[in-house]
Image (tube, one colour):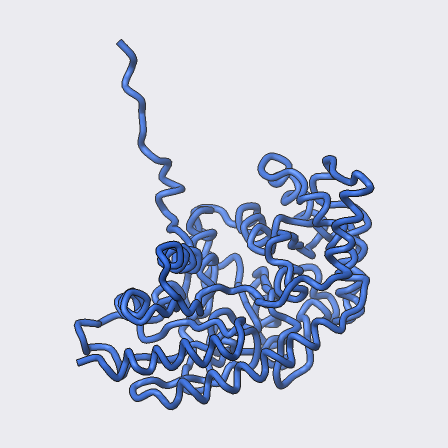
Length: 397
């Protein structure tokens, strides 16, 4: 007789949830597979193709048989290209020893939290937050300390907002500017004050620069450019959004050398190296022409202006103007309490099933009156989907 298997899932996995953004994409895809015409505002990825020069670099890598294992933390050529691009864009002075190439930006953030956060350590996370921050901190055994922001001022954040939440157990502050999901952007002055507060208390400042090149009213900026900041600032970056390379899965960290070494140790036992072919493509992205970035930003600005204006025409919906990224984060509080809908989760589920529009509910980002709309899709699709959303809300009894 065979022994009974011990099937309980490990507690550390039970402490996290499935990514809400990925679940929305899966639900929308399920409907599409049934022949349903879905307007999908859930996906957080550019609808633009990867620029041709980058694709050709990947093809050359295959043709030249660059298809073997590489160093676990990435090839030196790519590390140098990352450092050089960061210097050119922001005026920093990182060296390859500070750089670890990861399997996307999410992997960078995961590695950083796992090597720095001990059980009981506190991590300050402004609300609304990107869905993964909470779960990777929980997975490390840390404690999330959520800091609310002011929607009326466009989800503004500053040092005075954060400092009351700092305790003796605080280990890290996570800042995402431009923000996913709100599109809020920290001014260099406010960012510097937050850095000074972190420095005063001996806290790491993790800056997620995923959308750093998609700014509508200000110049690109990295807090890591401040004198001395490299000792306590942790940069998580990616080529995914900037160069429309989401599927290539290349991210990076720029951190103190000892932290890079700890992350490399972890990565050597998890993913090993990022894909060799993708690394060569990323070198071309960083060293090649940058005009595609400006072209995407111009299109995103037009879409943003249309989406916000259209949302503000819907009764019961309010929307702060995003200053960066490619998301709108409308407050749908005026539509709740009608048609049996009391939460953004219920709103999103019913909107998808009845109006065939996919959005991400605000609970995923720590708020209870919002949904996230990605405008990384065509103007025609935005118009069609927002018309459907308008009719859906008008029809709620």
